[in-house]
Amino acid sequence: MTDLLSQIDDWGPEKVVVVSDARTGMKGVLVIDNTARGMGKGGTRMNPGVSVTEIARLARVMTWKWAGVDMFYGGAKAGIVGDPNATDKEAILRAFARKLSNEVPREYVLGLDMGLNEYDAAILADELGDRGAAVGSPHELGGIPYDQLGVTGYGVAESAHVAAQRLGIDLNNATVSIQGFGAVGKAAAQRFAHYGSTIVAISTSAGALHDSNGLDIGELLRLAAEWGDDAVHHYRRLQVQPVGAELTVPCDVLVPAARQDVIDAGVAGDVMTKLVVEGANLPAKQDALKILAERKILVVPDFVANAGGIVAAGVAMEARYSPFRPDSDTIFPLVASRIRANTTDVLDESDATATPPHDAARRIAQDRVRAAMVARGRIRLEHKS
Image (cartoon, rainbow, N blue to C red; front, top):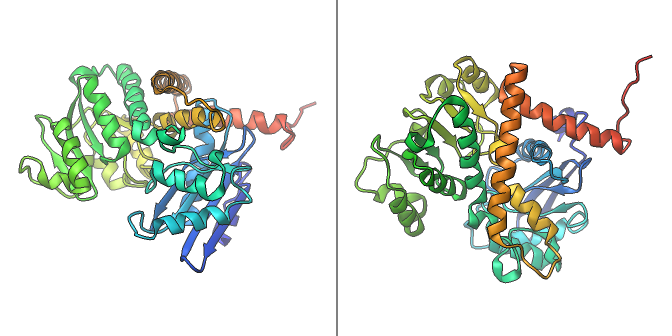
């Protein structure tokens, strides 16, 4: 906690709540970063390595992400320390929800992130006795299961399409490598295939596959449904490579869509691509981003490219207490519109200011958050005489 206190800046975080439950062994954290533009909203992840610092970093990304897509919610994130495949998962989720009953849903609404699915969202809402306590719940409960719909990966491909055009890359003839074949990676692969791209590499936690002639995404999706991450070991006897190999194969577009900090300085020097589109949150370290910029490799920031999920979550937020569920056919066009417009704005700003897209995107988001903070009287502008 001492380290986190030293990291508080003008933006936040505004509140950090650490919770535990002796009976279930539950340990968790909620970080509400900045609510100048609205109440806290961000996904909840479950992983054995969850830390307060990690969740605080991700909450800050959410602040910029909401501002970037110009939707009026605040940056927040929650995390639970634990195995998402554990047999006592439900008990842990219910304990987590109870401990945050002061904050949820008045200050924060639970959502989906790594390790949680739409049925977990239903459990969280059920424990709090409020259907508005969580979004991303199943259709049967009137929810919008946006992870199941694949809106984040869909948006990643839409962002890539805009950026590729800037570089003169025709996605119809482009090669793509995707790290991660979960909800984001699968949906991104399908959308890239729709555009006519050739997926030359994918990875799961069990290994990576590479075929310069292209992988059969339909077959991989079928195998993933049956074998999960081990699908890579059942694909056409293709040799499985170590995780990380997919980051350095020759390709036109590289999509890191798994974990944070996977592209370090060493990897950044070895990638063989023209365009990196960040499907995961914080996939590249700061020194890596500098190297990629020096190598003239365009990087579309995470909080620009992977914001499709929060666009859908924003729609779900508005519909939490409505008796009518928004039609998913309206969500995809909205995601495409917001993501494509935001990507265009960021790349225009990057070109106009001769700064990397990360800096340009953060500047746009910060201007919007700062304006909201001024309007609420949380900060004052200095007037020069």
